[in-house]
Image (cartoon, rainbow, N blue to C red; front, side, top):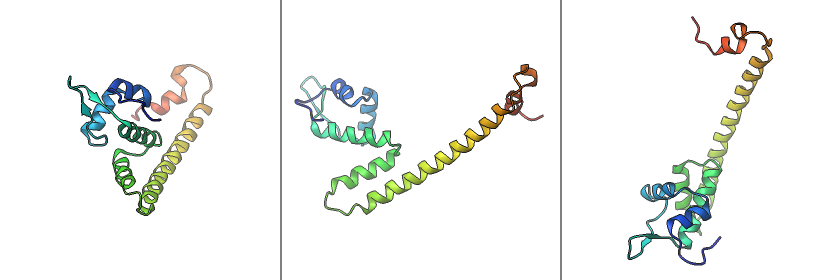
Length: 136
């Protein structure tokens, strides 16, 4: 996904499916380097910005935190380095994903149990409402 010519922020946003404000925020927090400016002070992005923002977007889609993405970007800059550090970050993230999946499975079991207790009666007798209400 290379730009044929420099992109303004709107075009970059469209090509990467990223909100303009998100691009500006990535610049403010240092994930995306500040772009060159036109004589009219408009941002102009090049292929490096496009590639980096695409990397950030893909990493966010995979659920990596901003700190993890920052570390991955730093590691990606040193192409000759061993990828052991990248592997550590990815494995830590996989562990986080596994924990979230386990939490969601437990939540699903609990909701399924509540729904299974439903007798399709009146709300006053509803086990779901009863389970959600604070204990007295």
